[in-house]
Length: 116
Image 1 (cartoon, rainbow, N blue to C red):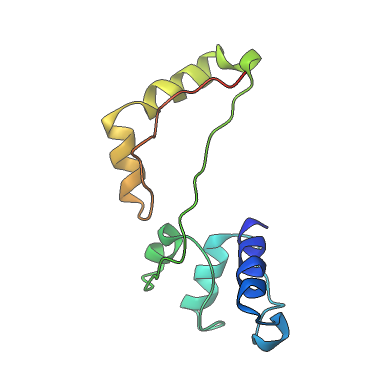
Image 2: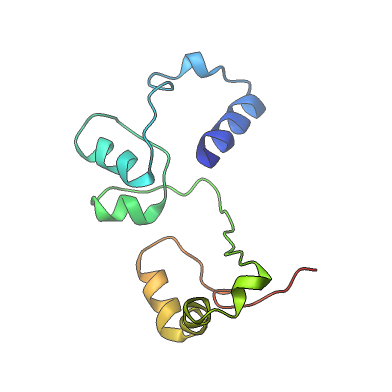
C-alpha cells in the first residue's frame, strides 16, 4: 500500500508510465514476500525494506527514508502491556535489537510525544 503509493508518485514525477515496467501488476502482501520472490528468482528486483532483503541474503539499495511512529490512544497508554513496551523501547537494548535488523534508524526510538 504505502510502497505502491511511493512508487506511483515517483513514476509520475519521472514521467514513466507503469505499463513500461515489466511486472508492475505483480503484487505481494509483505516486504518479506517481495524478498522471497527475488531470492527464488521469481522477480529480478522488488521494493521492500532492508531487513527483509538481509533475511534472504539479497543486496539492497536504499531509495528513500520513511519515518514510522507508534500511535497509542491516551485511554490505552496506562495499560501494563503498553507501559512495558514503552519502557523497553526506551532502552539501549531495544535500539540495538531494532538496529540489528538492518535499515532502521533508532535515534528517536522510545521518545514519547503527546499530541493534543
